[in-house]
Length: 274
Image (tube, rainbow, N blue to C red; front, side, top):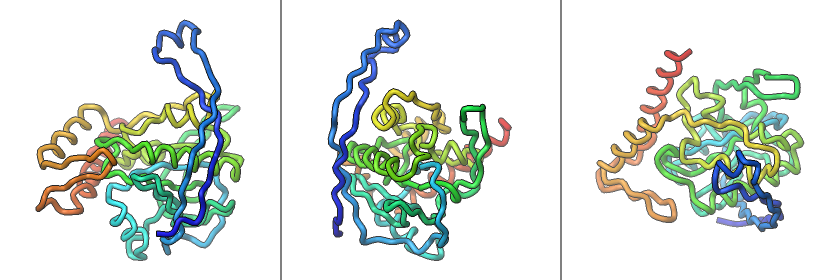
């Protein structure tokens, strides 16, 4: 792998109160410090799965891969899969640009599918549809973000990535522009980036003083616990660096199948609710 650029970003960080009561009593204290975020970008993997159209960038959509990095590359570089994302961030924080977006021009990747979301604007709420036409898709390598936490290296690179993109695409200056796949396609059972993703942390670092939009996980606590028990029962374990250890005999497609089952269950719940 060839690392061709090292981006060093200086960002203000707002320290959040330790207790909710502090915030309610108005005693929250904000401090502005500077942190250096390093983003390592690799250019050796490209996806053929994109439309040769320059799109306006109004949103960033976060996903989890439900597969290893190697399997993700297999899918995103196979024309038969008809799926892709602009960016993949591995456990170690290395950022892979598979579809053009980092240079200020963004091609249309195939990551969102049927999608819609009500966006808060100055005049109220507006329904936005078709997120492939207006967003950058970012895949975080994680077999299931409703079970497994993301790594510190992934957060560091993601925050640096968002800060970099904010400098190139004005619409991303608002925290409302950062959404999960579950916000825009939860009606289809999409549940990423999932319960383990730290939304409040992202907004505090990347949008200090601008508040944190609601980003509720679609997968409920009880269902997440059932998933965890299922995974533990198969002897699957997570190492500190984020790598998942699979016992012999467990197929590599296990987590892709698990995500499909989760999507089916959640889409049924969504249809009943609606």
